[in-house]
Amino acid sequence: MTGVLSGKVVIVTGAGRGVGAEIAKLAAREGARVVVNDLGGNESGKGEDLGPAQQVVAEIAAAGGEAIANGASVASWQGAHDLFAAAMNTFGDVDAIVNNAGVLRDVMFHKMSEPDWDTVVAVNLKGCFNVARAAAPHFKDKQKGSFVHMTSTSGLIGNFGQVNYGASKMGVAGLSKCIALDMAKFTVRSNCIAPFAWTRLVGTIPNTPENAARIEVARKMTPDKIAPFAVALCADASRDVTGQIFGVRRNEIFVFSQPRPVRSVHTHEGWTPESCIAHALPALRGSFSKLDRSSDVFTWDPV
Image (cartoon, rainbow, N blue to C red; front, side, top):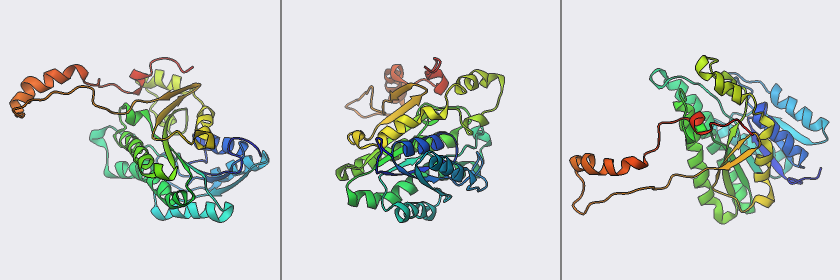
């Protein structure tokens, strides 16, 4: 099959459903051979079922594409390396990785348990590291490769009840930027996408009066809208794009700012707690960020 990924091999994690499945299917339509990875667990990461990944592979094959299913857990170092080895053993190469696998365990911070934290961080953040690290030596040796990691405005901006999810997704942004820096000399690139889409994970948001408007907007944003930009970042034509944080919201594509100093104060005498309170904080206060969340920033209906 011809397309922007013709002849490429792409691994997509969490590709049994939702955004990952749409990325895998579009990558195949654009000419890639695809490894459809999905543990097959539920929204909170429990259970295993290769069926969803196999279904996506069947759809790709029916459309004339080539793909294999893989059920390795990306939260495991060994699982991630087994996943990469499966791609190499089957297709002989890997050109791009889309780190899409993720889980949710939403709960207000003062009620959050250690397993709630550990499970989400293990899949969403360590999973990205594990898979990217498994591919890094191959990408370095071949002087090529693209990483696309899924972050979230829950981390970049903030949301209620998502301390674990937000921290893991903010961590993904830092992971991606540092990978981009470390691997640039090998012409390997690394970028993030914050996807806005109605998925199984978003569907776990409590259907309360407070969340009604948010859910209504989310339902308008289908997973297939994320796939074109993710596939584009895997293509050779995007080889000069690295270290960026993007957002995709239906038909809108954003590039996000990254934290930089916006105002400073100094004193030749050095600071004391008292002078910080009396002078530094008042001088900086005008540049403080608001205590807002994603829906406070993206206030318009998706285009």
